[in-house]
Image 1 (cartoon, rainbow, N blue to C red):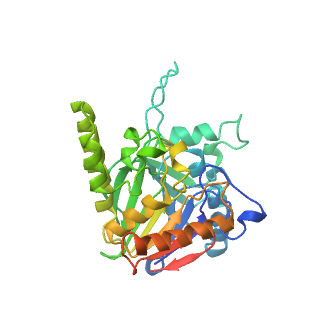
Image 2 (cartoon, rainbow, N blue to C red; image 1 turned 120 degrees about the horizontal axis):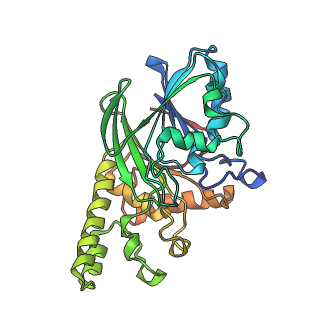
Length: 330
């Protein structure tokens, strides 16, 4: 089994000379299981366009069938689908899985949009010249939530993440033990209680921090909410436990986060904390900020590696920065 990064950015594509090494396309990862000639796609950001072109060289027209798993439906995770060339070829088929949320009550007659509705919306005539139903491949849309699934021989667990729209992480088991975990667009659940940098601990997953914060709360409801936040953070660590590979949201530096609270993304410190506490084999820093240059990503990678060794005394974990076009073998 191997996986390849086709898009590693968050929020918006970031092409240019300063992003040549790590790439400027938004989220998309391909998993390929050689023994079954099976393709699995994670998210459909702009990276899926180049993936689609690559698949055209590997499969005869009309013979490609694969599953696409979406973490959520924000633009940077779906905007590449209208440019996914295999979806325009008759005989190809795609099953798209992902979460949806009820729309904000804006007076519309349709308070709930299905996963397919959202894809139809982004390909309306006002936005795009081709409608979804004009794509010649067969596409089916299935809504999923937190739970366990078995789909086309894959054992899959999903976990709700902390993001402004319903977002889920995935854990894939391919041969009973080869676990790949994909958790992007996730923020530690304690964000509700943080207001400024003076309250910001080095490790938002540290139980001691929670106990200290709890002792300062007098409102029973706030104490209960904090306890729930603590439990959800613990659940996230357990979800990643002993994974061979963890692809995790690492959009912010520690000094950037205070002004980004509630935006639904993690500090690089949080990614390292989860990975070390969960005893994962390799951590892949993902969802690079669109303003981040190749040099800055290199600096963040060095920081992450030093952090694992110094703060968590973990000198065995491997840490890589997600790099567009790079393939990793299991």
